Image (cartoon, rainbow, N blue to C red; front, side):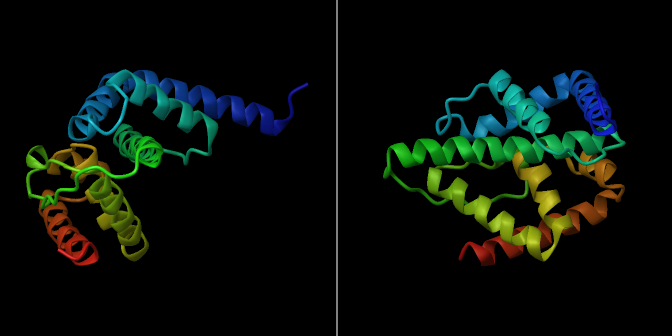
Length: 181
């Protein structure tokens, strides 16, 4: 016999599955963008990352996300954690390697992460930024890691593009300071 919490959980899983199915192509685009910059540091491919994201979403509490763009933004965050977890795991297996510095540019397409250490450093700086200002961290998450355009971020966050541009510039400055660059 199913209790109230069991039926609520089944409904949540059903909603998650529906959202996942409806956004699968877009999730693959986000995954492809994320892996493009990190492909040599993980053993994940686009499909694996999308499916790992789904497993992580289905295994935990997913906040109520009413809009498609909210779901995609949340999924991009989950993908970042999956990639960082894989990189940490691989890095723990083979400590060392060459380290190269890269500056974050204003265009997401031109951002290239060169080292495992930098990926982990950016992740830590982003976590610190999230404590300081969650909106700025969300903009970085969506732009830098998710490959979203300013317009897509603006729509997801219900803000205008100019505000997103200002958030992006402010977040980049704070991250540079946090990372000592």
